[in-house]
Image 1 (tube, rainbow, N blue to C red):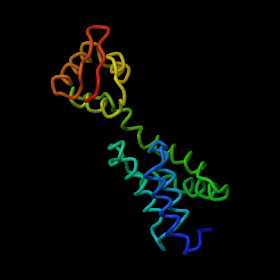
Image 2 (cartoon, rainbow, N blue to C red):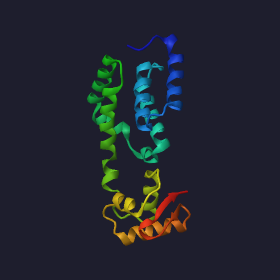
Image 3 (tube, rainbow, N blue to C red):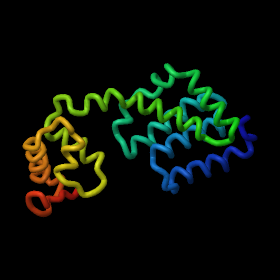
Image 4 (spheres, rainbow, N blue to C red):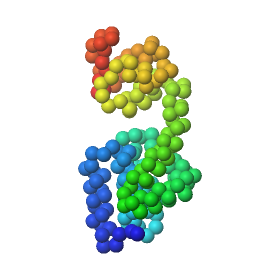
Length: 182
């Protein structure tokens, strides 16, 4: 049961505060926000659509690829599971069941991207994909681990190009080389 209308402004303020200040991973924050928005039910209609929209917007802050993932279509294919997960979370008074369900939906939605990760990418595309994912200093071996079907010489050329483009800084030489994002 949705909270009384008089509680909605305070609950929504708290929800946006959570989104702004909580240190949870954006993936989890997006799902908690999605669930809580639907639970609070601030609109007479469209709460599910708004929850899914916010889910996408929060994810896009850290992972732009989520702007291209059709959550609506994927959730529509699993609509009964979506509502079951929502009901289970409502019954328990926590979002865990919903989060687990949605993580499965997100995984399914990413499958085509993950399978196509190395298919005919140009050097600059590989570099950008890698730099979007890496948050720390890295070595050539990390790049090779990320692009498992890339040769050592291709990895070296890609990283040299990234250095030349000013995207990364090369520190050290040969096996002791470390790359730093700029």
